[in-house]
Image (cartoon, rainbow, N blue to C red; front, side):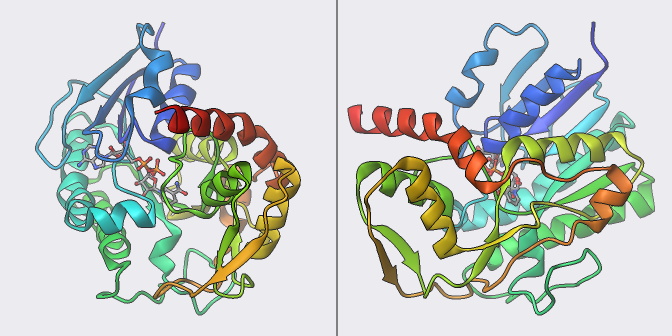
Length: 317
Ligand SMILES: NC(=O)c1ccc[n+]([C@@H]2O[C@H](COP(=O)([O-])OP(=O)(O)OC[C@H]3O[C@@H](n4cnc5c(N)ncnc54)[C@H](O)[C@@H]3O)[C@@H](O)[C@H]2O)c1
């Protein structure tokens, strides 16, 4: 029995693979499209014998037709600073060409469409916490611009297809999410600290560590996407955990959860690193009845086995 068919671009990635799991659990058939630029087959290994699941290795920057679908979830894009810096042009292409192609699929089959946008649309925000109505403070030519502007353009294309072609679109603005299946070396705070703590290395804090971030555990984030997809809200809607932590506090939580005796060391702040990032989730609360349930310490505990195992595999290799 299937509730319908969903396409997930970027389905072999961190969030995309969890989304495939959630859609299958909701009764959908799922086709994941991924060119494995930053994703991994191991994220989908457990679905190898699932009859309602299919993986197509393809680049969404090329036109694509995977047959009738009821939902298109456009999640393909390098997402971590390490990945989008390495693949700057590919990031701009997947946000532009890839978004057009994903929307064309939605248009052809009158499917509902949800795009994974980002808090990076707010840049280094001058408003705090960030509401969806804030237009952002983005440097269009800085080192992060390949990602930020790609996503801002992707939002503009999405809204244009809604306006001109009457496509039923949704925009999720995703804030920092963490959990199992993250890449160990993607440069984001949680995998960095977990890796360093579990290896007994110093934890590297950039700047004075007083800059804040919010951290959303992956199951909460995915629940937000599913609620948004099922709702009639077009967004943009912030999906993230509004609880703010300084980077130093995050380091301390990681040390406590891992039981590590590592020290914290400081390095200069990268260019354009936002000083504060925290979602205002009033819209998600009121319109989707959504709010995160898992706080940082619990989420880190839930991620610990994954990071231990991934580190074991990395050192064995
Ligand atoms: N993880 C977060 O905290 C976060 C925050 C904000 C936004 N997002 C957005 O969520 C989405 C998923 O992020 P993630 O953390 O899972 O990243 P990820 O790198 O783990 O996954 C992205 C996937 O997209 C695939 N991909 C990239 N270019 C492609 C192309 N041209 N054709 C087909 N597949 C392609 C990659 O191979 C990878 O599997 C991204 O769009 C990202 O911008 C994530």
